[in-house]
Picture 1 (cartoon, rainbow, N blue to C red):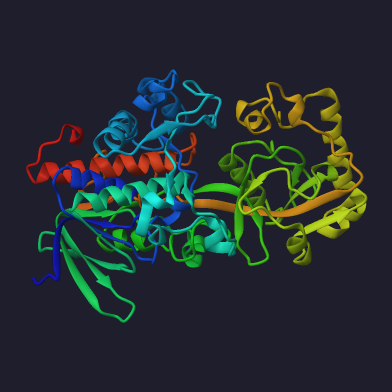
Picture 2: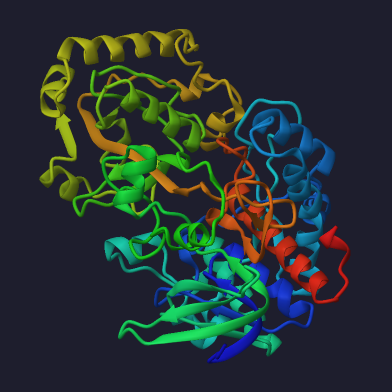
Length: 521
């Protein structure tokens, strides 16, 4: 069999999980080929806030956060239960502190904790949060690699000019990991290199990949130790979203239109991989923009969200995945796909929530996505809901505001909702809608990526339906079925679990090459 090039580990994708796996490989003395389909590194990870959820790590301890792996396991297992295997859950949680230590003390990425509450009231919850982040990095330090890193959503999808003198959040992770790989001398990072096939030997072991250039030229790359699929999910595939999730469009996802196209899923299925959780995404409310894209929206500080019937249906201050699931349920029940964020003019011309990029009232109004009226009846007519129902909904909420308790959905009673308001009690979370004018902004069900993919075991190896391992093939991040099952336990679980399982995958590859590593157990 002829090869155009050879490396020890082939990594498909370049998000947080992919690059963490690549770093684990070069640290063990292995050579790595990182193959990115698009013209920028980072995938959806570069869009993210950069939170990494790893309970009980040394960064939390250093900054005085009282936490442990045991507390994290108690919380995680209480939420996920038996939906995913206990041994895989334990592998993620128990290896987390090792990965945090590896990234900071072996690779040299400075880390810090930033408060952000866990998403559920369950045993073991941390209301201070378990999120760790890569520290921001200047463009000067990033140097020539700056242009190779995918810009954030406002610039990449909405054409908004952004200051890139400092990279933070997910961009800081991607930049620092790429710089570390460059410095290792063992990594070849290639852009515009779509992997279109896996190569197997006569025994069925995955031994390499096929890259097909835009002109149709194919390159065969041998991967002696194995291939790590970490190229994201299928959120940008209209066909797969319609098939598995009954979504009306793939345009509302937060990922880039050229990523999340389902390549990793197709590759895994082509060699007989079992799949799971294909009906699941990391859901979120999203503000619809005139270009058809939708921007992740969280941190509601005032106003209410209603469905197509003009009714509230959930606590608007729920964590975004939980609010997204409430929206999905309303869609399932036949209440339509249109949701409206209703608030009054005490917020001025700004929507009282976090949306990146911030929506322009003028642009959204021209597109029929933002309506303003002097009374609720006129607003209801503008957004196509029953006027009596919308008026009754607002009056009922205002009554809850007066008494300081939301009897329908208990808004403001959970620490997550109060976090964005900076409040110690529910009252500041229940501001009445009684201004001189009212606004309504169109929301849709968005997501931060799909969470279904190849089934993996505790070492990150891809499995067949009968539970046997496909030798030489591993998966992590949104290319794998999430260890969190249908739940989003806390900020940073997608990146955290992806990084850990990629680390464990490479540890297993190294072990099979005879390079001992304790974390492969």
